[in-house]
Image (cartoon, rainbow, N blue to C red; front, side, top):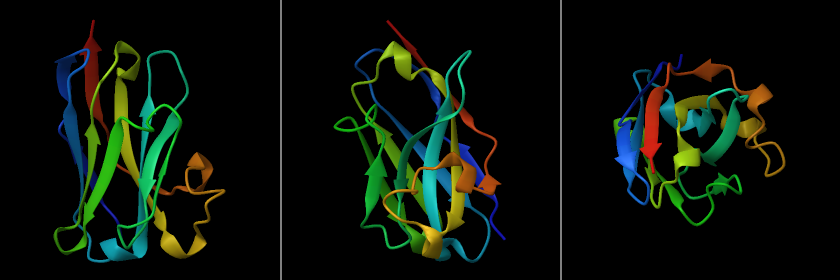
Length: 128
């Protein structure tokens, strides 16, 4: 079973950085592809980035490319989303989610409908 808990959110000025953490308290973390999604005020939840079970392959939404990076530490059951050059438009609740790695393809890696396991989210607020 997967139980995800996010942390690291907070308030930051535009241009600043934050590192979000996603920790799994289960024992099968390395069997899952982990992704980050966000929900901005008044908008639907959208994909941000994802990282494969081995920690090498990553996928990014256009909004995150060049500004966000993902790393993974399987022995400690954690994925980090490093966010830099933050903009007010990045203000959102950020969620991590998991799905079994064997079903992931480049075409469906960030498909929100494929994710069954979700954390409760961590709030990121970027002021101008």
